[in-house]
Image (cartoon, rainbow, N blue to C red; front, side):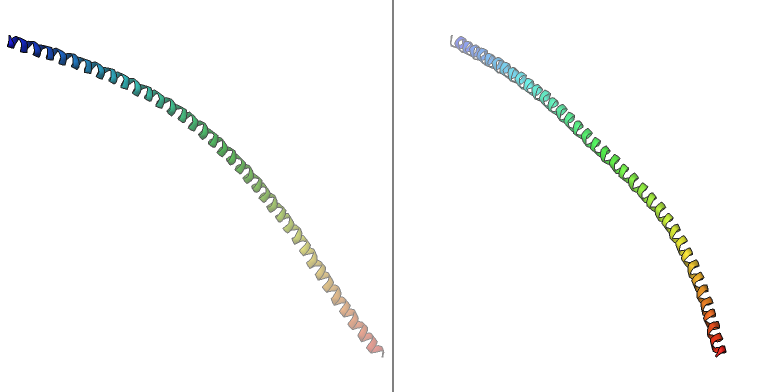
Amino acid sequence: EKLASQMMQVEQERASSRAEAERLLKTLDDERGNHSASLQAQAHQLAREHAAAMESLTAESEGLLAEMREKIMLTEEKCQMVTCTLSELKSTTAHQFAEKDAELEQAKSALANAQHIAQELVYVRDRLVAMVTHEQ
């Protein structure tokens, strides 16, 4: 009887332990399911945030790229203007040098003519002086 009572008690404890183990397993499964769902929701949220950040970065990059293209275009236009201005200046300077050369040649010619006239005047003066001196 005592053995039967002990066997019954062991059987009850075993049944109670089994029930507790099954309850713990169910709780563990539920928590794992909840944790898995939470991780999945977090993963989806992170994926959405990542997609939004990438979209924002792409838009910002495209904006910066458009700005840089505009600046490059303006710089090219300025370079063309400077090149044209330099070309015009070079042409104008060459033309001015040609004009100044012609003026210099005219001045040299005028100086040569003036020197020739001065020599003739000196000759005439010397002749006049000689004539006046000879008549006296």
